[in-house]
Image (cartoon, rainbow, N blue to C red; front, side, top):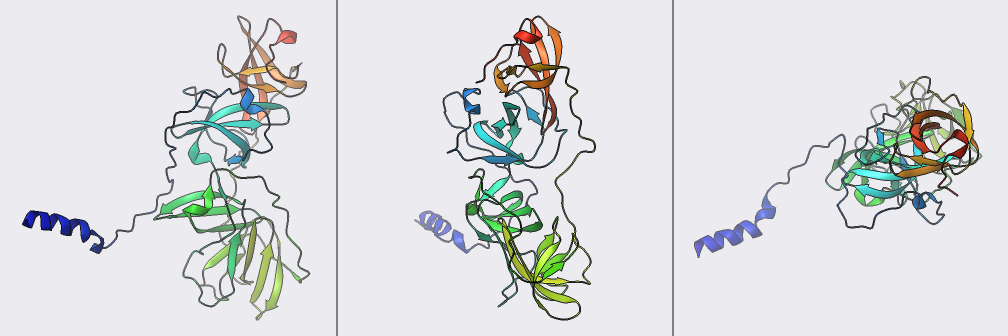
Length: 336
């Protein structure tokens, strides 16, 4: 009986132990659960679907086919609009729809940006200001990058005209969403205040106050009122973010993050034009994973045995696909 009583006490009294606060991690895992699903037709999945939700990825290493050679990103580091079509473990297969080509690639899910599902006030970095009207809100549809995870909250960073970093509930983040018009700065009729990138908007007119946002690529804020020769109460709003706080002319600039950009992004030197719908394969003898759109200039090299290496410009830099046909003018097609 005593053993039973001890067991009951251990089960019932377990909540009395002090909770252990986990240490935030820099790259939270988002491994998707394995599910049984029918095989995906990669060509059919490339057709535009106006009703489908989209995702955005930061360029990183990709594979043209599952288990294939990893290809390093060599293009712009800015987010790329994609459509998820399949997944295997922590790899996501996404459809890439460019003006001149459509194809699919496999990419690590950690390169997926998250999308806010509703307007969310962002918990600032630092202690909150009691009774203050200062705040920063990210709008539904804003894209953010996950930085760390703690309990049921995720630290995120938004990068637009303003840079915003803070904590949000896990429940407001999704891996995909509907496209929305972020628009530019919304005019209010107030007097403009010109600032430099790095200007810090704080929750109070004190340099030790918590940081709400940093001016990243914009230059103008709206003046609510001038407090003294240093501090000004300001606001800013566009389709993604709205902030109200305080900026100082004497505050040193904060650190601004930028989308990674490579120096001198390479591009192809076209040597022929191929027909619209020319089929793009992951490799010679591999499955078709895309096609060209319109009659497009490409870099085409003969690989022998009826296969060609067809290279086009992409957000990852020049990508080489395999094309099949007896001659340049007779390449197989598989697109509309």
